[in-house]
Image (tube, rainbow, N blue to C red; front, side, top):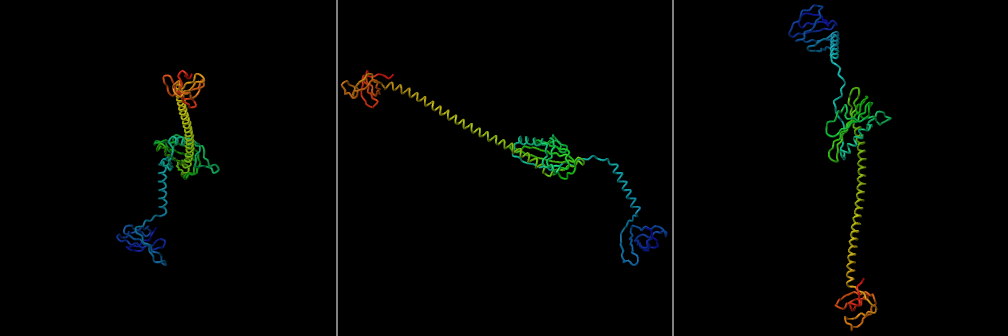
Length: 357
């Protein structure tokens, strides 16, 4: 801006547009300027006041140490800054797209099952081509085409404890239930099986969608992990139910075998007892026969008289028939004291009887 100068400290100068300008310098005197020279007020120790023209309210805006830039200077500065930015951009080489820092938002589950059963089921589900809990098209909410893998580009190879399985599906377009997914990319599901005890196993499932273009990782909101776990849990229940049925059948068969064995043992014991009884009976019969031969005799002749005492002159008590059996009760040198089958007792001479055959 150009000003007209009037000499003297504290003097008043007029702006070319018609405004009056008063400069007061506290420490330095005004320089001698030509009448047509461009005047720039001093910075140090000066105050500048723009006084409004006559007729306007008497108001002054006071500013300390102002700096003025005209339009040409501003444009030059902007062009300079633009050239500098362009030079820096061209000097910096373009870096290839990188994956975001690896993270995880998976879910962990505790299973009341042995490690062997969980490994068997997880292997089956990991080899299943279906990725549960997500889809691409509304008219087909089953996403298929996955394949098993030993590792993945995102998760890498598992080096921790337990066993890891992977399922990978490429070419999925904006799959549902992955946060902020909006491009074509690859879905990876990782299963990590870690035994806790003989009958308890920990299972962790992580699901991530990596976009092909920006290589941005979008984590599942938990639906994929929960759906995959449900499939694993259902299969485990089928195995456990089959094991329970098998165990029940084996137990029933064992009980039947034990029952049959008990019956067989009882029959064998009864047979042994019967055989022992028969043997005892045979022994008794043999002994009976021996005793009978010793104590039972039969009458030789008919009309044999049974005496009341072991004397020839004794009274006759009964006449016996030939072959009648008598039990010997008393034995003397010449007589037998006997008893008939009808309980009559008497005496016979030894030569009147004979032993049984």
